[in-house]
Image 1 (cartoon, rainbow, N blue to C red):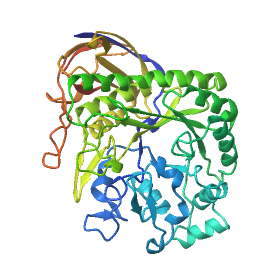
Image 2: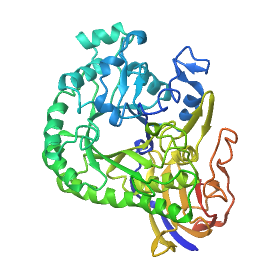
Image 3: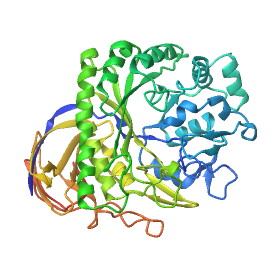
Length: 493
């Protein structure tokens, strides 16, 4: 297979917001408890109750923003139950995810401490589904008000004198479904009411995010932009890549080429979704003031055998790494509208970065793509023109090669994905706008097996390696021999 990719190094198309590389941690399964939080008394080494191995791994990703506490959990979460002495915090049943008891030991203070340790922005999702306007208003006051007030005084009593800086706040989650089964017209009015009381205190300025569409519900986007667009800073979009259907999602590690192909094809559907939702947003917001917030995305398979079905624990393979790479390339192309994206989820849930088992931890193939691609954060996206063959399966076809490029700090980075499981790709990279022949270095993530993945017995079975599969480097370009099923990043300096 051959492909020609023309990269216009002198033609930036916009800035790739670092928040596109955001994450999501919900009170779901073993994401928070066991995955992130073990408590100060745990034998697992920790900092303020947060396990050190996970913390150090996540730091290496330069995580820009972390969404919490949900998800569906957010619209049954009452924040006051999660502050104060842990031994006296109210226990609750997590009705959405496994029916387990939630002890509320990981609450506002613990989450914001995690964000400080990671050096990332907190993105808090407020309870519009089962909560009150007063409850939401008081939460924002508790976190951000620097003065004399009941909530600020309570925060100080609980050990935090100065307020936190909070930029991102979601006014509800999936209010078309688990967040209240609302019609868009009703939610638009509720959003307008609730967001009124999400106030800016002192120098803190909140970026208000409205609940957006479930996949292709364009009527929802139209209604929200028309009735509430002037009251929001961001509008969310949720889409999961499911190779089968919701009743039979398919397995995470046991799949054939038809399922591989379906996963790639459905990943690419994200481009159509963003294009069509953005076109609606453009009609009401031609200046692109309102950001698209893709705050739930990723693969969703059957849970691993023997695990709680409500915990959504699945393995993570090379297939997931390709899914991540394809999504990032789509987000880059739409960087004029997509301000943030948050993969679901950070630890032990769905398309996770990290899996844990007791004191053991491993990094997933998806983690490695996030680490390789972090060079794109806040870089200038470059225009790329593609002329490539297709990958065909039956009567369907998708592009075999996906390419994205960006420029930052005098360096150009080119990321490439070859989604074909059996054919290499001869990629001719034509470079426009360079002043001299570049120095090239590269890394690649690949394997000879479609379901290659890391286990606790072999945690480094799949990891990035140095890549030298390029030749004929000149000011005009270079040739790359891209193996099947591979994700590569080239650095040109």
